[in-house]
Length: 244
Image 1: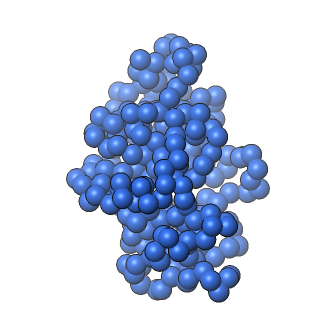
Image 2: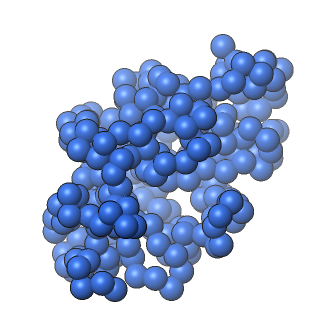
């Protein structure tokens, strides 16, 4: 590990290095080490930092510039896709299959990537966060079959998205759009998507300068959120609703 990259101290509540000190290449690499305890993860997300590393690497912490972000009222579904949803039998749930969503995200092949950053340690860490009420999943079902989903961390009035998957065409789009619709109704303006991605851009994500992103979340993470499980809040929601 480069001598220019700080190692995190053992105290999970210790401050992270200043985001402006992150490397430009690779963009946003800020620090290494530490652990994946709930205290450390909450500390990281509150300050716009997230873990991202592969099996065999130390834990790496990132704060890229710019940041990929959705406005929760700005997720775009094409007119053709919306028309297809009018007769969709898919239903949407939340926090009923968190581990299954994370496992599906971990196993989903991705263009340009060999393997996954959602290692067994990461899966266990976010499972702990879920059981504590900090991490959530939105799931799309076709009957009893899980066909799409998204998971991430909620702090205050910000949702920090981690990953999503489709087991049927459009499954991840429906999960994302359903999540954004509910967050927007709650008055949560931002959904963090972390790093630039052409697919996310096609769905309405935009780049936000890091300084602007950090300033935006600084107040939002301290705002009243939606603690506990989200199952009831998504009860009865269907993919057909997203056609409107």
